[in-house]
Length: 606
Image: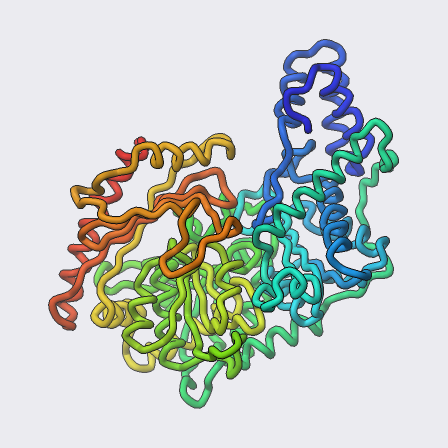
């Protein structure tokens, strides 16, 4: 709508945008640029062209972008138009007004975006339930089920940089059951084609706003966005219920040990109190919080990139662990839906951060040995076998482990929206430190309850004079060594993301690190093995399997301006002895290093 406009048309569009923008800050920024452009400033005009060169795409991840003015940034007008589009989409599917639950984290303007959404749905006659304070994403996901809400909205940018924000959408209740009669999507994030249909409705709302005879009047700028009246409050009772439900996952008779010193960091996010209070309630009394990162702070003063996976993000926590002779370091990302962990490695004399695949294998084995953490799970007709699962970009180790234990296993497309839809799933994980230990109650990744169960298994290992690293060696002895890593290519513009995979489709690699590629899979046109292909499951990802059993996956990130190349090298120990496992691990690691160099060359990354 806004690309390639003639000068007068662009300035007219910007002028209309400033009329509709209720935020005095972004309105003033655009007004200044508009005035300068009208006076002949080419710099100002070029800035407006960049800001209005398109619109944020609404997809299965909702919205996520840097805060700022115009249709390509996160701001109150973009959020209002999105909320109106979401409302109209739901109205088309439902016969009457229904219920929405809304949560928000502590980032800049998260509360404002949540309040604007609540106001729009309230004025449309919906039953609106709004959290009373910033909180973790899994608490919002839980409330979609508790309230049997048709729509859930979480305002968060997860682990993105401080100046970003985002808008996640969940569907539940009658709306979800109307779209997916099998009920497997209730309480989960949206998938295609719902995202495309919602996006079309939003586009229609925007088109009406900018038509020759628009229905929407000019907005009154409001410097302070207040909580709307006439909405229900989700507060302390919901948080207490979540905690009690999480405690139900524990197995004190068989896993009674609580002797564990834990250092925990909330990364300036909203997980601090939820996690520390939950661990204390479970009997883990030695929990040491990293005070510099405990309170929510949208500036993220100690973490320019508040992602626990980023180099240096855990430095303060590791320092505290060293000082306190801790057994375990735990970290959430800012909205507490992901979990990272680090353990002390006696061999190196230093702390080592576990990968998402390693945490997934440890939690997976724990649940295989315990059985489902909750005595009931979502079932499909005629099939009640519990399932554990992981996304395709995660290691194949969990599948091998499940096979050796006689447990069902599913591999899905990337995203918990797909894992949540696996019938009978009792545990799911993604390599990007996302874990769901309670799919019955939370249909998304949950770094809070995962922290609790990880402490349970770590305390059990300590009581047996074992460690996380020795447990990983036992898993490798049983199911083989699987070593994973990544090559990442950052791009300046999201529009460049597809160019990398497009180039690989034109010239696919014949070998990786001297190992011939014997099988390739294009998930844009082909299904995962054993699955059916539908347009809704088309995703821009390429998989290469080599003769040595190693694997490469290349896909653009769904939330950040980068292309990820996932590497997995495998090796089979010649016996179950620690020496044999260590030798196999060295062999796999050496090949992984060669794979990394090879893919950097293939992808043209220095």
